[in-house]
Length: 101
Image 1: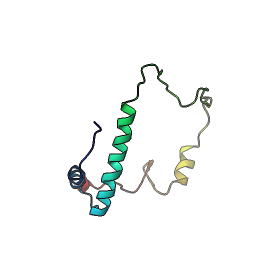
Image 2 (image 1 turned 60 degrees about the vertical axis):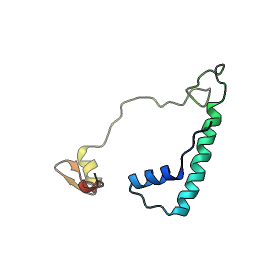
Image 3 (image 1 turned 120 degrees about the horizontal axis):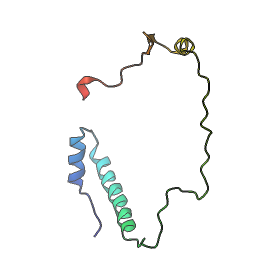
Image 4 (image 1 turned 180 degrees about the vertical axis):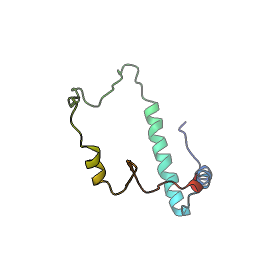
């Protein structure tokens, strides 16, 4: 029997994640997520005992770049290109607010 998720379970997850999603979109998501779960159910029913595992999508060797040391810019040159530096640290905009944690 295929796994399904109910509309009420979707609404519960949306509420726990503090998302605001209109009911019409939730209904569409309900249909789509259950279609995805149905595909997984089909995959789970495949007989794969005779199929060897693969680690790459291609049978050829992946391209590799040589791992060779190279010269980097001097610190002063790097810092001169940065928008803001204090005491040899790059200053970047805050992306996480403590109140959101």
